[in-house]
Amino acid sequence: MYFRNAIVRTPGKNFADGLTTSGLGAPVYEKALAQHRLYCEALRKCGLQLIILEPDLRYPDSTFIEDVAVLTQKSAILTNPGADSRKGEVEAIKGTLAACFDQVCSINPPGTMDGGDICEAGDHYFIGISERTNEDGARQLAALLAIEGYTSSFVDIHGVPGILHLKSGISYLGDNNLVLIDALAGWDAFAGYNIIQVDEAENYAANCVRINDVVIMPAGFPRLKQSVEQLGYPVLPLEVSEYQKMDGGLSCLSLRF
Image 1 (cartoon, one colour):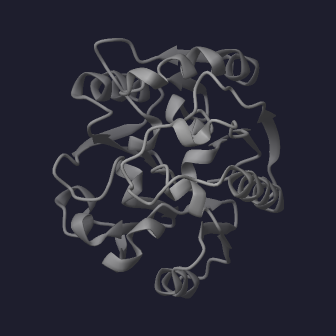
Image 2 (tube, one colour):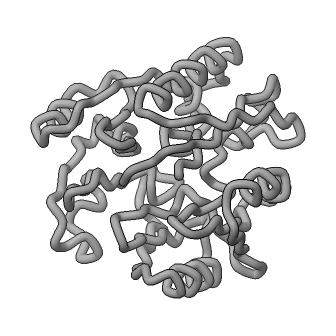
Image 3 (cartoon, rainbow, N blue to C red):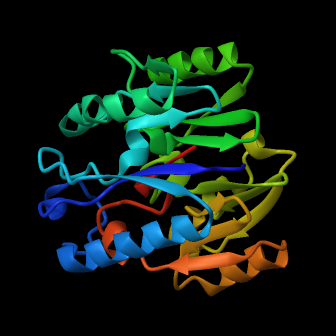
């Protein structure tokens, strides 16, 4: 769970032109920029060195950089996003990742995959099957992970209300602690973990991220914050309202390694 670096991409002026199903209205660009700066400051407080990429106006969603790659201890695995409008983001990040990793692999068509569907839980990876990640992409990722000694399992979230990606409803905090929304909490896939169940009213906060000794989570969700603090983790709340409007969460905004 120890990270030293993160890659982020500043949102572009056309951020509001990206994909969204939230129905929360258009993001305010200046506010999104301010929230992104505070996010970067939080990553630094957690001990990370940042690679900050310039906005890419060709791809309004490209600030959600987590979706274009899955990073392991040994390699960067480029995804093949499920939304056609985002596929070009992969080529745009390839050079940056090649400079950071000796090994760069790819998910190839007909496989599709968004990084937001991949939850690392120690040496095991939960791979969400969703509207953006198909079974072919999941099988390709599982095979690549197996080469590196990781296990994986598939979690089909079709029909689970209110979540776009698997990590919209799950976070692994380390120490066998798994944050889950109510709709996923009783699933056999997560048996054996200590479950921190999220009240339905706080579902958005399920996308939180442990970075070294700190858990960063969306601000304004006191019950989950208290549950996480009771486990002994310091919590750093961050305002991410403008990213919530675009179906994005905290984990979406960086690639950590």
